[in-house]
Length: 338
Image (tube, rainbow, N blue to C red; front, side, top):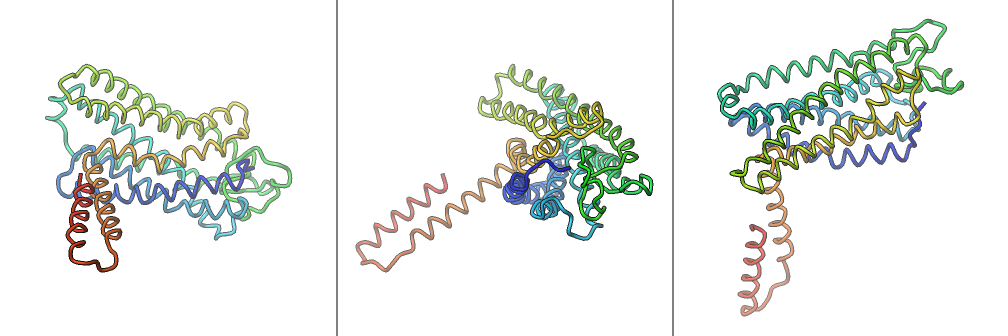
């Protein structure tokens, strides 16, 4: 049973979509341009992370619609397992790519010469393909769940053992990813625990090791510009906070659910934390890639130039006043360019 209120769920979904979609679309354009020009391993990894976030955001309107209808599924039921699969697959896919970026960063600082000699874009492509296949394979459980159970039990492609009596008798098409039968829970809860261990705990431990050592090594390199060093350290700390804050609560609910054999009441709220990841990843892109920072700077400069151009439009003035206006317009353009 969904414990999250309609207002809270819908607010999180809308905020994530409004902030995340344009930011990820801008990052996607930037990484595509850079990969076509000169592909580097970290750009390939960040491009795949961007694609994963965009795929998540494209299917987020289905969750919005579900929240509007008080968590009742009124769309074609075939979209239920599809949207659920994409929703959860892209969440766990993000953990792999964030971890891969941390490994790339750590190796570049800890073993700069050796890593630069063995650094190949092909390795990043192979790793990306593996991550996609591994995530798809694990989260295919969403498609399998409707076929598990006995005819006497309600069978539903849903997720929640903590269900009230009336909800247990709801038709499968009325809700999505809620109300599991006992037979389904015997399969689902161990799978959730495995997802937590393999797709969250192991990547998080690797990411923590890499970024902690990344920060430790970078702090000792005094020849690096202080601004660049602080930006890199901030990126590492921010990634760890996003990793733990967005994915941690939801995966902890897997462990609690397995130990108690029921859904924690806060499980749906924990899932909202994972949803926020799609609009926080662009911040990681910004600090990780100079190309993204350059694109953002160009977009902001173009917006300022257009705004100053609109503000400079006015009624015709006398000749003596035109010179002063031109000076003011040039001054505004110079300010916008700095």
